[in-house]
Length: 423
Ligand SMILES: NC(=O)C1=CN([C@@H]2O[C@H](COP(=O)(O)OP(=O)(O)OC[C@H]3O[C@@H](n4cnc5c(N)ncnc54)[C@H](O)[C@@H]3O)[C@@H](O)[C@H]2O)C=CC1
View (cartoon, rainbow, N blue to C red):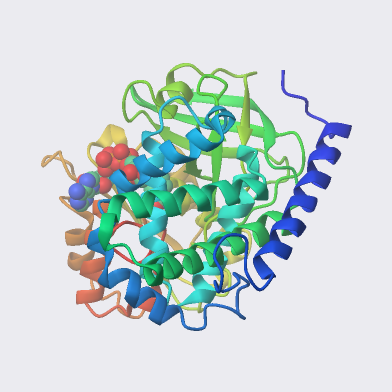
């Protein structure tokens, strides 16, 4: 059983986390740093002002330490050899974890010339890592293991300059993670949530509704991470498919993507009354601070979750006077799994037009083919603010097409997709 209230143990862990954070910060900020003399401190804004130079050095020599999956194999081997108990913090299968870490390395290196941006992404990551039980002290072991892995992978061509560049980049990112974790000490590392709704909307799709045990704050367009007791220590992100509600219930749309994974646990083996864990909300694809103007939402498959949350949010304030178009891509008519809610929203909101686009049924009486083609047929979107969500390839092709047709890249919002922007 997972305790739903705050316990003395939680207080103890909060104190311990604060203590470790302060100790690590003192070490990092001390002239020698924890492990590498002369290394820069990781505080954002102050440090890594030469991020572009660090980036250049790392990039010029990237061939020595890639592919990242090999480097990451070495890294975990070194980490679990040094601290075997750390293995118990990870899920049974490390594949997903290894992919994510590779993506974070790529993201960090690609963006070192924008340290502020790196810092804010890693602060969110540090906040999210609290749910895994990660304490700042673990980052020391991570750093030692990564430096060993880099040395092993690069072999005799590894130099102290490269070691220094990687250590500085890593400490900058880790410093931001510690900041993020520390700033979040007033909230739980994760929430327990009761499943209050579970509707099958087709053989491979479920709409889940859950009620967190404590107030959960998020903005329309963000995602939350879910963990099922059927997959201990594994977490997967899903877009929250509703704007914040009075009854505090959250909705998620989950497509079964294969056997043995989280999506199977959530679609096939989860029932009303079950308990899930929910990590803090994250993601920056929201309308906060977005420029005014008409809006184009493009959603593919379960990417509809994000668009639905944004629409519900807009509906609470008459869309701020905007006109809004939603193009919903699905393979078949029956894949329009949330059509009733969309039709209800469209009927209620005179500012909204919903256009379904079906890609694998040429007899569909409406738009058929790829969403990007349907957009072209419907006119000029270059003055709209666009928000795109769905399968990565669909997001990539839609964003490319919008840019070709004249929409400035800065007016297109989407969650990170490998290949465009962040990884
Ligand atoms: N916030 C977000 O951006 C969200 C993204 N997703 C992602 O959406 C995906 C799930 O999608 P499903 O429901 O299985 O979608 P799906 O595979 O059923 O496809 C949905 C739509 O995308 C189009 N599409 C699929 N592959 C494409 C390609 N290679 N090029 C162009 N268009 C393509 C299809 O024609 C269809 O219109 C997952 O990858 C998930 O990570 C899911 C929820 C939220």
